[in-house]
Image (cartoon, chains in turn purple, green):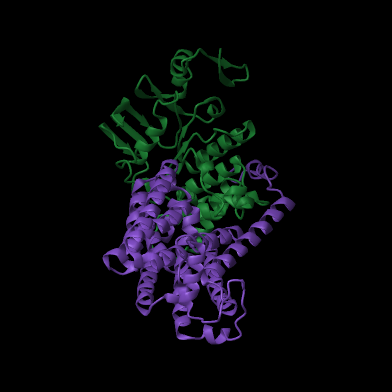
Length: 317
Length: 277
């Protein structure tokens, strides 16, 4: 399966630089030419839009502990994509219907995270199986299957780009509108609810937005690797800064750098873009995580040294 | 932090701030023959009592007697099946901008992503839609609330870096930042050590004294609260009652309430505590 995936992804890159099975990394002297070619333009634009979209929702995914739901939504998209090929409709449409539909169901299931995890995992497994079944029915969908599993940034069409841009605008407007109540209900649902924030409606709306992002991101890095572009940069950013807006910016920045550097390296070394993009995001996360760990060891969390000071001074008295 | 005396006058206008027409002379709570059914089970009924503004009132009862349900009724999150509830002159849920709420499992929330200051700010502007600016006055209000609970020096830390007692302070700052007239706390002393319990109770007492804020606090142990309490709502045998402190600190009532023999001890110094015997 992996061999097929790599072969297919590389094949569709049309880089045409005699790849031998023994060569793991082949330097492409003409990489700048590749990077500035028309199909790369779509890849860069598409990847940029997806990185921006992931930056908008990724922070909330982490704060809401919805990482597993994001992962599951990507898998729920799989039967949508392979099913779309089967009945002859655009793959993005099938992906979108399944991802957003799945998101609404998960969002409506509500608060009990423990119950939700089992239900989500079960649906995830069933969806992946169903995707495989649909793929087996239509012979020509096997490349679709691979593209959905691992993404194919180099095959982004003009039509897809238009769709991506529209979704990004909708997403930015929606997040701008609900930013504070969503943050409030993500951090502390009970207090938010008591202050009249429609916590449940926001939860469903957020999952629908996440479904849209997943639909796009699957086309770039694929179902199996989506986590690294939607969740990992946000988790990295939260380790770097506890300020919500700054974290969203940093997260978007990591996503953009991963996509841009990933595409450049994939052109230089003739590697599948998804692989390089995901690797960069993961390496950045790992570096920050190690850094945070060593910092925490050096300066243990201060508990109780000055916590009583304020009370004794008595600001109200 | 180093200038507590400067902080007090800065916080003083807060007392006068709620310039809402909702008259100050209405009681904090008026329950009239209230009953609640949850999941087909009658939680409690026949709740008829009045809690005056400016009081500190405990909500007590054995486990599962419906204390948290009582808070949710007051917040308008759980409908009543009979009777009427009036909170600060409004129907439940209608005047929640005047209520600060500290939920029970505040310490369990996902707290790695934001600073204490951000959490308090959300208590003030978290319900606002769209990207409106936070004004300088609102920022000052957040700093005042943090100073009031002695959490100024904790403001830049992540909530996950705070101890249980520190987080409880931040939760209280979040609840009082909007200058509410009623603050509701669900088991704020649970899982705190004795020193933190005492400091949180002192803090509640100061908020009550300085701002005249009505305080409603769910507790399973009355002892740490006795010095500040004016009365208690108690849930006994499926009914909700209210009594002033003198009526609550009654050996027979407490024994019945907790299902075990309770003795009330009064020291010659005028202190009072209760114990299971």
